[in-house]
Amino acid sequence: MASGIHRSQVDLVDFVDWRGVECLNQSSAHVIDNALKQGYRDDDGLHLESDADEQLLIYIPFTQVVKLHSVVIKGPEEEGPRTLKLFANKENMGFSNVNDYPPSDSLMLSQDDLKEKPISLKYVKFQNVRSLTIFIEDNQGGNDISKVQKIALYGTTVDTTNMKELKKIEEH
Image (cartoon, rainbow, N blue to C red; front, side, top):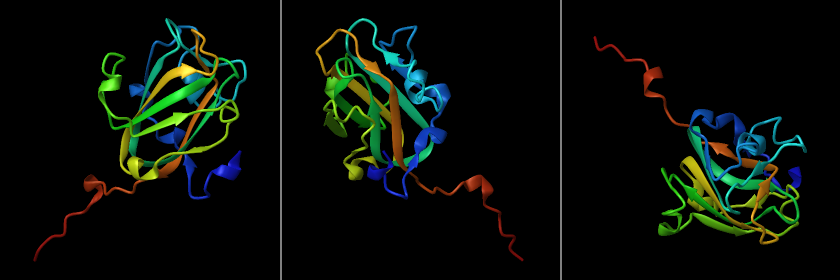
């Protein structure tokens, strides 16, 4: 798997602001944490599953600004995601307005892509990312339920200056 990830890229899981993570249309028994959290997402018995139909809308805020380079998605052959639309820094999106905005990137996943193959994103569109919204529009088999076993985001953090840490210089 690591072959498609650049050496400078890190798994951004440590920079996810877990208090703000949301997933619309998730099954109450198979929630977003199963696909996104370290440990859970590597357990083959756990997955994220859609509820009312095949669509999922996932909102992932970060604790600091990141540059997103690639995404790794793992899912089953039939129920695994097919069409993904990624939106950088779009807050409060819902199914009613998801088509009102142009996505930062759109991905058509093949069954091969769902085997944890890193998929490079339009890097220029993901330079200053505070949050990522992933819209899973449909799945490989056209089924009513979509399943995602793993979502991993790779990139780098943007070094920002923390103004609180700056010391004032006394003038004499």
